[in-house]
Image (cartoon, rainbow over the protein chains, first blue to last red):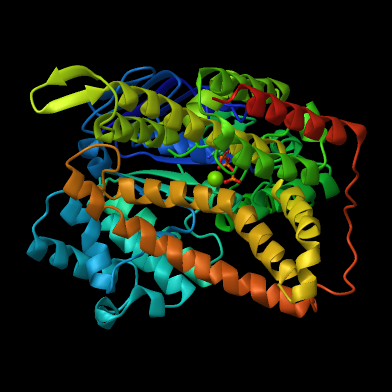
Length: 289
Length: 265
Ligand SMILES: Nc1ncnc2c1ncn2[C@@H]1O[C@H](COP(=O)(O)OP(=O)(O)OP(=O)(O)O)[C@@H](O)[C@H]1O
Ligand SMILES: [Mg+2]
């Protein structure tokens, strides 16, 4: 299922003194099975963009295409359940959405709202709890007796159990420990690869954007500033730094290296291995830097 | 989803009302609540309406916004109107539809009482729209000051009030967020049968309660950690200033009161 935003504008609180233009003229294509990362300074409109992807917000101008469904500014939309079933959103701090007595019930909540039978929902709950790296016993516990990290995983399992075709992640790892962070990000990447799940990730971690995404969109002050592959985006570090963003550590290291030895490698490396190979071949090619 | 509500919200602007001392605004609102009951005929209601509209104009809050924001309570006003319309059985019968008959007095009562209700809501909204919660609390604390003599916990009350007022917008934001999260999980808040919508309240309220309790606890700990102790001996950072405008505005309301007494039937 392809999703596409076409010249989307969104204003909060239209018609009040609090009216606020959050995003303007945003066009983004998310082809089926792609992995898109959205980066940008805080307040640049990333979360606002995300909420258009399953029609939680309706554009005040422009069009959103979700599969065959068209959502146009100024039109009343009904029956959006179909869209929401296909696009699952993991919000910032999703643990705030937990409410059921047991973890199992909470995970089943989403699927059952979309008409899945109780047995099937329970089966999915079991599968999802394993996917997020928790054990089966937790299903019987109250979600409020869990640690913050466990609650986060349960909330994510609740979205996975909806079996969406596209998953939208708003800083899913904020506030987790480094290992938990990596586990969660690897989980989403695995789902993306194994099931061809389209993935949209909002992140402040340039490492994650570089490692996982096929395409990166930079948002700045409510507009799309730049789009491109990770290589293209991180090959001009100066531009990112100017926008108050960072570059992955590997790229920063490469910059320092190039500066120190006043040289320029032919390409920007996004992983340690790549950089090691490059430096190695450079060293064997020439005897000294 | 809740962004249009204006009750309890402060709208920053430059206006006479914004610059007034919260004490005078509070006095005016209390006085107004009493004065409203003086009106009992067309002229007196027109005077009240005129006064309220003048205040609304002085607040410099866009009319469009005021109207949109008051819409939710307009329902209550209409409800009051129909209640009186159908239940008053005095005066001449104006209209009869089947078993339902509408009396002249019913129309009169309906219009007057719902108008009275509307004016009260508008004036109190203007207070909160033009005064920050902190100012309101400071004002109240001073106005109620004399009650301390009879051991009434004025300061504690004011603190409680300012904390609740402070957290209204936070709670609204939170409600919006949780509603969105549950909507994404297939709950429908804006359409569907009433029964379903009632059920949809649970996944909204539980997370809200939990986060409110958590926040209350954190706030209490933070205050304790900083050695908060209210009441006696605590100095104030903000000093209130009574200005000429404040006196004038109170005089204006007194003049309106005098007019009402003259014109009431
Ligand atoms: N509910 C709302 N009402 C009014 N304005 C809002 C609301 N939500 C966001 N905004 C405003 O819209 C702009 C974009 O906000 P958004 O949440 O999309 O930013 P973001 O890029 O997700 O930031 P962050 O990285 O901090 O999450 C901000 O200026 C913000 O103040
Ligand atoms: Mg955000």
